[in-house]
Length: 259
Ligand code: MN
Image (spheres, rainbow, N blue to C red):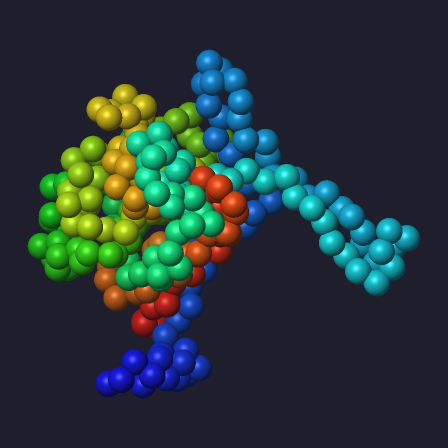
């Protein structure tokens, strides 16, 4: 099949509904939970805020628009390599300089929902990834790996979403294994890509430290991962082209065979 025929068949499958478009994005608004760092770091991201410019009124009789106060790492968002000190010196490490080619990629979804239901501090290890591969096949180079935890319904409340810092994520050896596999990045349903307790890992925050060091990416606060198959879906995740951006809120969508 030629590339043109491949694209035509995708378009036909979208039109017929055989391929479903699944939204992996949480609503972005004043209630979007934001991370609060320990007091020694001083500064935090303020909550999302929309400021009205006009609303079909004296300030603009025919139009409505606003301007936003918005953190780079708020809500469903993308981590660029420049976000972490380990990726600081990489070339082309900011959101405006990443190749668009990287914004479309297959995804492997590792279902950890049962383990997380039993233990919110559950950490996925390399052994857990290998067990998944034994069942579903090897993780291909260039794929996203998403950790399904069924955590996302908690995002309706900052308290339950942040859970006092007890949230699931990957181990150090998990991320090392995925870097060896040449994945394009790692996605999590929680406020960040790392586990809540990852400050105590060595190195701390491995999904940030080890992936961004290698020019890979992160996706945080994903939703609807329970609607994705373990393999076979394609993800479109294109951050805003913010000049010198370390990350960006974005709309993440998946194309998946309708089940
Ligand atoms: Mn981030």
